[in-house]
Image 1 (spheres, chains in turn brown, red):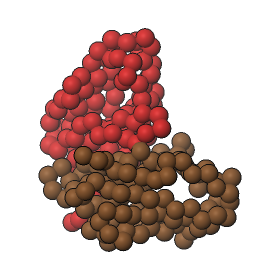
Image 2: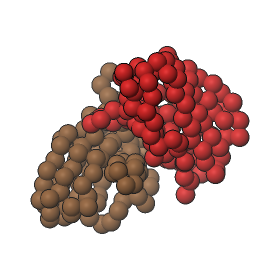
Image 3: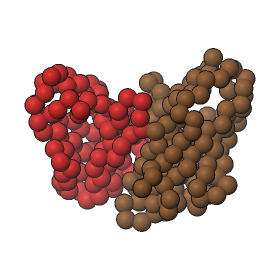
Image 4: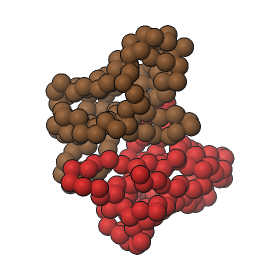
Length: 115
Length: 114
């Protein structure tokens, strides 16, 4: 079975540019989570969705960040405009509401570098 | 919010040795999870624990859900070079219906000396 798929794996962009990160959750999973990982702050939850609806976006750093989930198999995280402090690894994870519902399965991540 | 204290932050061990690491919280958790992250990859779920006192194994890995529900432990027996990586604990504390957020520890970086 395919796991969580993220693209691109690496993104290098200049300050001020728009960045879009993409995620395809595991088929049948109804929760999707976006995380950011840095050395200083570890893994931080940015936002999560249930059945394509955003449930909690309190972790989104500021208005420059936005996330959408137009359908059950696709989500995007957008940063506009990007800043050097946004450089981090961004992970998408999904889980299934049922037995083992707190078990989140992570994608390989997108390493973002903003110069 | 909840915080998880994971220790040690890093450890160097000889191949073949056993490894122990733990995670503690000031809050009660109803689920504990252990993940491993290899360089350049996402965290991979190793073990999930759902009951206080529960002891679960996955190959050479054994994890326990502390009876106080405020801690969890991970042991690795007879370490091998491929055990190298960062191990994260994560917990879920009930905070209302529909809450599925996890709290993550800062990780334990394991290095194995051949």
